[in-house]
Amino acid sequence: MATKHLMRLDLIFKNERDTADILKKVMTKSNNDIINELISSGLKGRGGAGFPTGLKWKLTADEVSDEKYIICNADEGEPGTFKDREILVRVPDKVWTGMAACAKIIGAKEGFIYLRGEYDFLKKELLKSIDEFHLLLDELNFPFRINIFSGSGAYICGEESALFESMQGDRGEPRNKPPFPTQKGYRNKPTVINNVETLAHTYSIFKYGVDIFRDLGVQDSRGSKVFSVSGDTPIPGIYELEFGMTLQRFVEDFGDGDAKAVQVGGASGFCVPRKKFEKTIIGYQGKLTGTSLPTGGSMMIFNSSRSMYNVLHNYLEFFVEESCGQCTPCRVGTQQLLLGIEKVKRGELPSGYLDKLLDLAETMRITAKCGLGQSVANSFSSIVENFKEEMIY
Amino acid sequence: MSDVKQIVHNLTNQYGKSVESLLPILQNIMEINHVITEEAMIEVARELDISAAEVFGTATFYSFLNTSKPYGKYIIRVCKTITCMMHGKNQIIEEIELMLKIKPGETTHDRLFTLLETNCLGQCHQGPAMLINDTPYTQLTPSKVRDIINSYLVLEVSNY
Image (cartoon, rainbow over the protein chains, first blue to last red):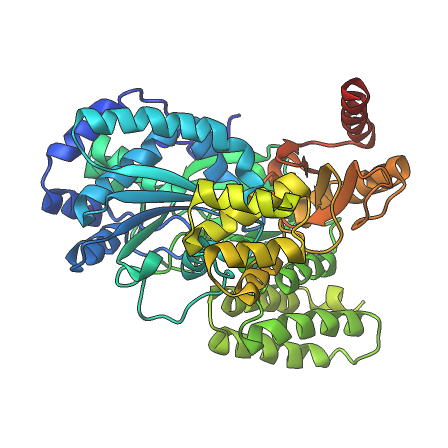
């Protein structure tokens, strides 16, 4: 479907049918060249955190160990994201190629896809695709194998260290960092863990070179990004767009004409009200003008018929259930935030109590052990501060 | 050897006895028995030579593993996260409740269906969505959900 302002790109989903050639090209390049290409492309992790991919590979390559791993994080659990599934369905070869390239650089013999349990229905086709890819690897005499590990319905396992714990048979409880996965990841060995989309982007960079990728986007946010668009939109779906757009442009293209807020980055992301659409830019934080928001690609649009109290209530219920429970700020904090907004809404507590809850959310941001607990404040504070009257009345 | 012991034994032969096999083994027990009983957990612990508490900890952590009453043959998981909620998840639940005479969390007397609500299924652009076992169903309406459940009932009758 045509969009009015934003250019739709077709790097990720273009069916290239030249996996064997690209793989061969990568395998004959020097490791240094590949790392330099990735670093100068400006590619950053597409799961949402935005760590530079080339640097991640380099750090892991520099570790001395006889055992290393490359893991593709397909535990796509953030509310409002569904792009990784689409990539795995339509262009799985690109992901496997990225994994093999990484394996060559860091010296891994084995790689895994951590596939969320909700996507188990993809497994059969993926295994077929992996088998075919293994034949290509055999032709190049490259000893590397990819396996699938299924999750079992736990959002927290998308957090990289919780994911390793889960693969090791444990509860999906995040570890303290440092050490980082590049030093001690799966089985406590140096591990690269990349989002599905990140790996697919490496394929485009290998194929088209650095410039095509680098020329897209804005400073500190290079390349294209796959966005998952849902909520009050006449055209929900998956769109590959350039980084650096304003939310205003986005809403003009995707909204239903009555958008009052956009939740950028899922339940753990930020809610932007209409009055801030114009000055909000979608991209990673850096030297951008105005407010820039990092995102894993979840864009949920709410029109004026929606109660933002209900939206926040839904997110908080989500966090209460998905908190792993190991650290107190997150376990107790999520529950208290939920109880708190319910009591204010029912008039059992004064509206001033919302300020106490905002303090609690900020405390969680600085004291929770992992990204889950730390980021609850993103949606909580941005919704409560921008839609205070809806929380009270 | 009891059935559960035999199942666990077969699974450990298939997946190996390292702790990394624990989650796959538990997932398979779940698929076969629709529940992971205390007996099964103790047996897994014995086979993998780890403590039963460790198995219990893992088994109770994941929402797709069930250690309480056995689920039905078909586990219906309706997404309750925001966009599915906005697009009418409650009507879908009501339709299923009406049809199967069960509430979320319950299993039909014939042990065919269990109804559950679940967090984001990653189908937000085509909600409301649900899974029946591994199979996703999207853009649900009350009449569509009725047809889908009927198709499972027909399947059961023809298998009988």
